[in-house]
Image (tube, rainbow, N blue to C red; front, top):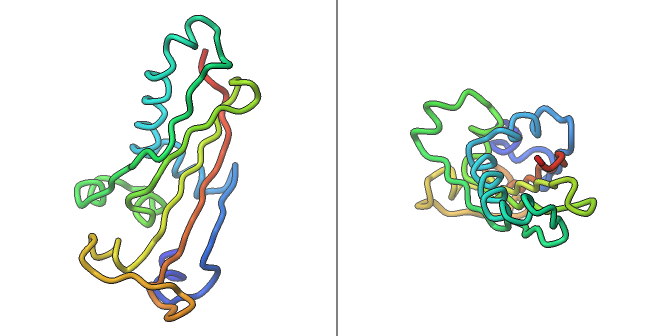
Length: 141
């Protein structure tokens, strides 16, 4: 993906589903774990009482990725993604959790917020490349 982003090749919008290497890399990313922990903390009472219809989703969880994470993370997907957003939604009557991780790789994010960003349709190299990573996992009892 890094090559495609840097050169402007390939699709501007990419979706990675269950079982893909990219999703496997993101399933235990620190920000995903933070959103997962928030979901379980937020819903501890409902889960303990078996009231799964009242489970509350976690949306727009902001996962930051800085220089420290770059130096300590060996996952190429997590390094490419950088900072991202996580949504944790209940599905199948609360029996499962659907994770949706979204990211926009841009020159602005590459420059830690001080550089410009542009759409790949206007200038391909280093232009905005949006990714969605999605999977479902069983809710812990």
